[in-house]
Length: 556
Ligand SMILES: Cc1cc2nc3c(=O)[nH]c(=O)nc-3n(C[C@H](O)[C@H](O)[C@H](O)COP(=O)(O)OP(=O)(O)OC[C@H]3O[C@@H](n4cnc5c(N)ncnc54)[C@H](O)[C@@H]3O)c2cc1C
Ligand SMILES: *[C@@H]1O[C@H](CO)[C@@H](O)[C@H](O)[C@H]1NC(C)=O
Ligand SMILES: *[C@@H]1O[C@H](CO)[C@@H](O)[C@H](O)[C@H]1NC(C)=O
Ligand SMILES: *[C@@H]1O[C@H](CO)[C@@H](O)[C@H](O)[C@H]1NC(C)=O
Ligand SMILES: *[C@@H]1O[C@H](CO)[C@@H](O)[C@H](O)[C@H]1NC(C)=O
Ligand SMILES: *[C@@H]1O[C@H](CO)[C@@H](O)[C@H](O)[C@H]1NC(C)=O
Image (cartoon, rainbow, N blue to C red; front, side, top):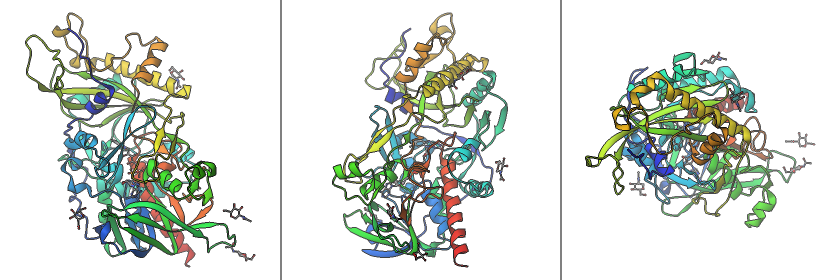
């Protein structure tokens, strides 16, 4: 019996999350699907110039809750380059996850692909809701270290209130099928304990997390949170591509060389330009994500002086760290073909170790053997069929390996060139080796025996791996290191580029410029330990509440 061959790494990445269907139990009464009230309009319907208190660039994971919150008291504009997620059935369903990820085109698909210089394919959301509208839906709050290490003086009560506001609206409790239940039991057998049951908190041990997919497998995302905006105070422009932040001499300072953000220029879907300007005390809030926000600052002349000059971009403010301190958490793991039918699932269960391994599983239906490839199941040669591939993967905390971003073009629609330098820091590599050994421990657990083949592979019961198996001798350090490097992929938790303390201050204001903040994953110098969407939705709500309170305090 030969092992299946010819599956590329990219294919494995895709197998991971193909055609998932989940059955979930609601923690709350069912919520209505998003309605997108009449405040969402095509950009071409906007006037050439208009004025707002807050202009939010990017209707993504952090941008939508921020906009909904600020709109309670202020006039808010959201500028989103993509369309609405409800227009696309694949985007809106768990089953469509892979189709959404692989249906990409240059300028208007909800997923914008990019491949880092490390050679790892990756993706960005380009739709209202941002990456929360194309992601795998796992929902889990930040670890405690995040509040200590993120350079921000968090009001932890307000943090909790903000999480709860999000969770009441878009978070659901999953129900486990046989694969996810066995994976949970396997984690516990592998000593990743205690068992924390269903929990939205980041705790060492094994737990079931939340999901932004509901019982019927329908996606909820940050875009849903716009339904809690104050309709008369908010406008959302879709197909609005922001090209530049407008800066002028700051009127609120005695220093005539100090700059202030006064508005933005955006291009609509038919190529016309519009100006959106801020009113007195107003601000431009960049929520364009870890790739989009540093890109827009650079295009607006905020970045390293010599670098901007090399592009002929007039320098508004010399900011050496824009686009620096960019990170991606490496993903490594294995996929197997189980001999028994299992459910389709996205991420539901996670194992968290003291030394920073974060282990997840998924199970997905794939067309197998892939069309055009030699069948390996013979005799008899079966017709192509749908099989379920089960995956166990780990990401590491941090990471410590640091990368950066630079422009590929002055056209904002073109992805910047990104490099993450996976495993350039040896600690990351050690964490991967440790995490991969934990996967091996899970595979050795009794709970996993059910997923081994008996007769087909001879007297030894063994797994049928799809793609690279773990090194046979997991004590061999060199082989484990080689596995980590050779099979590295992304878990899409990239962050940084406008890091707190480097580009923005602890109130998320761009250092040295008035009226401009960055509020999204680009501000994270450390990942929130867990999957980031919970922390980003919380951040949008949190900062919206803080800014509203601050202005109320000022006007007294
Ligand atoms: C495939 C995939 C799976 C994932 N799975 C999970 C998961 O299961 N759980 C989890 O917690 N996290 C997951 N993540 C990560 C998580 O979704 C992201 O970290 C998070 O959504 C990023 O939020 P953000 O606010 O920083 O940026 P985004 O949500 O990406 O928002 C940025 C927005 O800005 C818009 N924009 C950018 N540039 C411009 C411009 N010039 N003009 C106008 N608009 C612009 C974009 O279109 C986008 O809507 C996943 C991510 C991906 C891609
Ligand atoms: C927005 O523009 C698209 C074409 O880009 C069009 O198909 C759609 O009907 C427009 N929507 C509205 C609400 O005008
Ligand atoms: C916030 O919630 C977590 C549990 O989700 C709890 O452990 C913590 O004590 C709460 N903090 C505050 C300040 O309320
Ligand atoms: C500007 O300078 C004047 C006189 O020195 C001072 O009183 C005022 O506080 C300064 N304003 C700002 C915004 O710094
Ligand atoms: C004035 O502002 C510029 C730009 O922010 C800064 O570099 C400079 O140090 C400031 N000068 C004074 C006197 O504050
Ligand atoms: C890897 O695991 C070993 C053994 O448990 C531990 O001593 C070491 O500190 C871990 N390394 C890292 C980088 O966490």
